[in-house]
Image 1 (cartoon, rainbow, N blue to C red):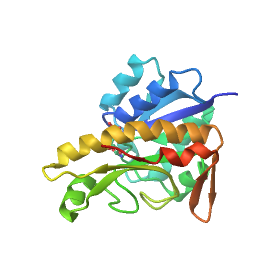
Image 2 (image 1 turned 90 degrees about the horizontal axis):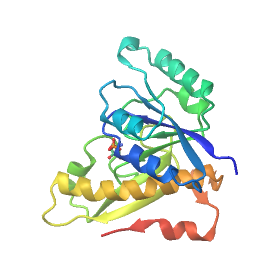
Image 3 (image 1 turned 60 degrees about the vertical axis):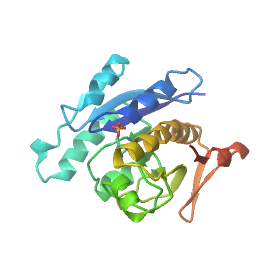
Length: 215
Ligand code: GRF
């Protein structure tokens, strides 16, 4: 099977990007990481990608000012020129217009550090602690114009412990993120995902066993 060409979009550290790069290093993985794009020139993830031999690109959003469409056209041109099939958002801190989302509809996924639809937006770990939830986690979902929404592909839950701080909880969730993102990209690249009435189904009996609760 032809491997899908994937671009990962980052803004910072890039640990989820690294998890995807590691997974795709296996020749049996159905996707190759063809490009890492950052909207921030100082994103630490860029060096990690380069060290792994992945092509990187900075498209700084700042010169575009408030013109989100111009930024997105520049990004879209690069993705198209490099024959990118799929886009993974991994800590990418920009919202997209409906135009860009529709261009990549069904081909662009995001990771969010919470069990959606709970705790959309920033500061998820602080808010989970403040709410007193006993389970927290991470979600991978298709991107739609509404932020941190869209059909959920896979989730992983982790326990919230009595002595957790936002930092300890974030670390537990991050470990779960690194497990589910490669899984979701595999399913997408294999063409196993279908969305009906906002619900994402995964073809293949083993899929649901991978919705995880981890210690
Ligand atoms: C992750 O927690 C991700 O879920 C969120 O931003 C963080 C990015 O971390 N969207 P990293 O850059 O992947 O290390």
